Length: 273
Image 1 (cartoon, rainbow, N blue to C red):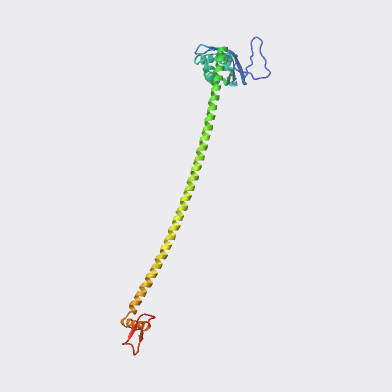
Image 2 (cartoon, rainbow, N blue to C red):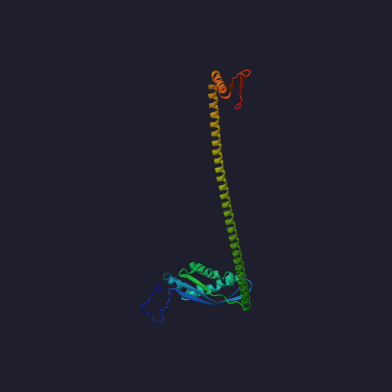
């Protein structure tokens, strides 16, 4: 037929017309029990891979004509088997089971959508969910032991890191305390030096004041002597000197007159008779 019938009441001609219901809403296809071999030759088994997909309504007729109503068998179920085996054959057991397992979902979704865009553009891959593969028991036990040892190593490393952090914290604390003491000592030293400098300046100012006073006193004394000398130079004339000599003789000398004295006796010493 050239068209797709919508949901509802329809008629068909017996033996000539056949009908198939096609889901165009989001659906989940579960691909189970996928065996594969790693690059090292170890066989593993993926228990289930879930593919969330949708067939676009506008591409239903072309997709069904090209790949029948079981289009998902070709582009999802078979494709998942192929991609899983390709992935395993290129990687080691450790990569498949541990280190690259978290990227397998995105890898499968991208690979499915890439081919669908080219050959079946009506199929939209929404997401892929992969369960952890089953591996041989002995190998799994070895992985578990390895993980346990790795956990112990991580615990030891974390403990060491904690000890180092504590030591670093103590070292920083000691450094801060030492720096604080050094700063306090420097502040006290600067304070003492400042006080000594202030005392020195005060002493210098006091010395300058004392020197100024002494100098002023000396200048005053010198000025007085100079004025006295100038005054004396003006007073010590010949007449004044003669007057002073006579006055001095009158104040200090004694003259005695009498019949029994041979003449005039002058006693210049005080208290003599």
